[in-house]
Length: 319
Image (cartoon, rainbow, N blue to C red; front, side, top):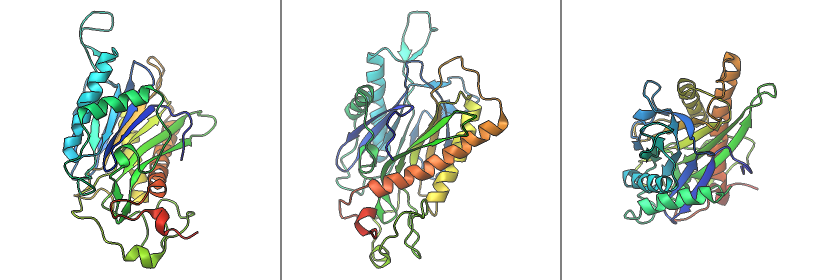
C-alpha cells in the first residue's frame, strides 16, 4: 500500500539479495521512540536506550537492515551521515557548543541463505539510505531495501507499509513500515488465503503445498509504527507491544525461538506538544498500530517478486 506522504521519511538501498531501509525523523528534533522485542533470536542496536526508564527520549533515525548481525554496520554509516548534517543529541545541552551524537537504533533480519551469504549492507549503504530519505525517499514496497532478501515461510517476503486513521474526533494517523521475513507462514495451507487479508485471492494450493522452505529456518519480522499523535516513551512502549498483535494476525506461528521479531514505535509530533491523555483515544492508536502492521505484512508479501529460487505470492495467486 503506497503512502504518498509518510509521517517519517523512508530511504531504501537495494542490493539484489539484501539491503537496508532508513526510517528518518521528519525534523531535526527527532522522534520520541520505544521498542518491544518479542522474538527469540533478535539482532538489535540501541534498544536498551529506548526503555521507558532510560534517559534519551528521541531518535533521529531507525535502520531496518538485511545481513543478519553483520547488517548492523549500516547504522554506523547512518550516524556518520547524520553527524555530517549536524543532527544529533546535544551532549552539553541544546544551546551549548559541543558534540552531537545521532541516536540511531537498528534491527536486522536473517537473509544470509538468499543469494550470496558474504553480501551484506555496509556503513556506506547505511549512509546512502539516510541520504535517500533526505532526498525524498520512495513509496516502493515488496522486494526493496531491507526486504530484498526476505522470505515469508516458503514464499518471498519483503518490505511493506500501511496507514490507518483513528476516529475522526481523534484526528490521528498511524503508519507501519515492516520488513516481513518470518519463520511462520503467511498463507493458510488449507484454504490458500492470506492470514492477514482473506479478501485477497487464494493461492493455488497444489503449487503452494509443494514448495520447499529455504534452510535454515532463521528469520525475523521487524518494523516501525509511526504516529503523529504526541505520545510519551511509556505510551509508545504500549503501542509497540500492541503492534505485535498485527504480526500474530498475519503470520502463524509468530514470535518463535528462531524469529527476532522487533517493533519500534515513534511519535513524529513536534517537541512540546501535549501528550494524549484520553485513555480510549490512546487505545485506538494502539489498535490502529496493530492493524497497520498486519496490513503492511500483507503489502510486503503481495508486492514481492520471485527470485533466488523462491516463489512469490503473485506467482501462484489465483486471478
